Amino acid sequence: MAEMTDRSLSPAEAPPSTPDRDKVADFRAKVRAAGQEWTGDGPEDLVELLSRAAAGDPGLAAIVRAGGGLLHDFLDGYRQKTTADLADLLADGQQLPADIAEGLPPRYLIAVVRLADPGSPVDALRAAAGDDVLLTHRDGNVVLLVPAVDPGSGERAVARLAQCLGGSGWLATAERDRACLADGVTEASHVLRLVLAGLRPSGAYTVSDVLVEYAVTLNEKVRADLAAMIGPLRAHKVLWETLTAFIDSDYSRNKAARSLFVHRSTLDYRLRRIGEVTGCDPTSGRGAQTLTAAMIAEALLQG
Image 1 (cartoon, one colour):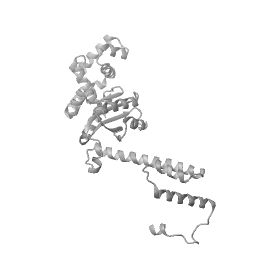
Image 2 (spheres, one colour):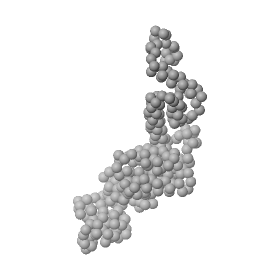
Image 3 (cartoon, rainbow, N blue to C red):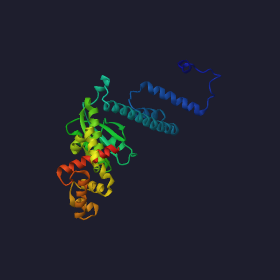
Image 4 (cartoon, helix red, strand yellow):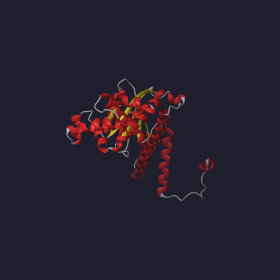
């Protein structure tokens, strides 16, 4: 290949000279000369160099601008793939080469995001997360690894991401040192599953918001027992909807009755029936917590 490139064309082989060919050849000579002195390090610098070489020729200048845009898009896509690969390695707890690990921040905020519209572009989330964010996708969620550069940077990043979602998505977060990112991704992902299973409103959540549910659903036997306890309630659509409304109303009977458009006495009757079917009284503090965890366990079991 090198021999073919370096070999000069014989007069018989050379294409005939035309004004367009001469113009392009002159442009390439200018580019080659400029390249010998180039000290830039980015596509913008390269486009500026080529634009100077094309000065005075609008046609060549337009080609340079178009080519520069394509180059920028290509490199941007390549960088995103590279950061996704790095994010996957960190999220999986894989050991990185020392030269790469040394250039990474020591601590990260992990943000696992479920968009209300899974087809929505993630560019806005990437911008809200800030500089040097690593982004990848897992189980239909967007996973962001945001450098925690100071004690308050994580909270600020969460606020920006929540604002970016604008009430149309869910965000679960955790913070970990770089060596423990896999554990943080697992925690945030499970928190998000619990939030979605519990029909929580759009917003930002941490494990402290679902502490009881998190603890009981991590145990497979407990999770199965809870799902089995509340399973029979599925056969009673009205009772299931009543319990859901009661939990969504933060266990307020008045709020739940209003949301269901029923009289308070009707709600009380249904709550008694829920207790009879499940063996757990939803009007007691312990019973309400148990039934909430059971509904989440059942939702997780259903997938």
